[in-house]
Image (tube, rainbow, N blue to C red; front, side, top):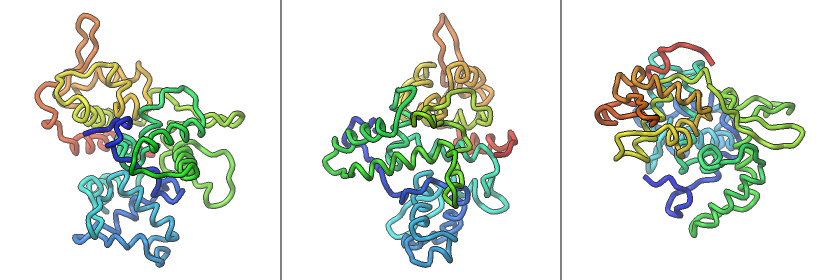
Length: 311
């Protein structure tokens, strides 16, 4: 799978959210609408009676659909939207792991779903995986995204569209200090504490560190997927690859190196010995004991909830 945004063949998207950041109950509402055996007609989120159906206006309903697809809670078909197996595992009433998003693992998992690949929310992917500046501005992101868009003959986005997309990215992760009215409700992913905005300068900065609410099994899931996408033929992953590679857990979760290494050192326990930490002759890496496909994604997801905790 090509995830390198320098390749013009990589699909991108810089709109669809209707300028709304993802909110708390939107994924659950979208899941419920499409969780039946027939799914939901694609027009369900476009109808004028969205207020009656979802309790939000039409534009917000379209945004709700966008985020549910981007986080892979729903999948798109020719005529209908359907709940994914992951969506069912988490959001099903009574039997779901976390129908009402009360556990931090859901937030970390939805974040990882959103930013690990570039296709559904390209600005989000770029900021987490390819931006190397410690501090940056909205304009930095807009200019970088303009280069990516301009490299694609079939992609079109105005400067205003890119500015709106960058603003949604910022609002999705950075707490706002003062904004009266309903829009002041903090978006879902702000709780993760991944981004801060310096009020005096307007500069933005990712917050690197331990991320204590991130369960080891959710970390292991992202490492496994990164390994499969980018290093599937290699029996090992180095610390540097796990820290800095696009789509790596170090990038996705903004872990500092000490925190990353601590998690890698316990990866054997987390994966039942299917991945193992090795440190031989100063070469620090994780070795695969068997095959990646023997590590079940849903087993790792479920383990992330057995550890307890609340958002």
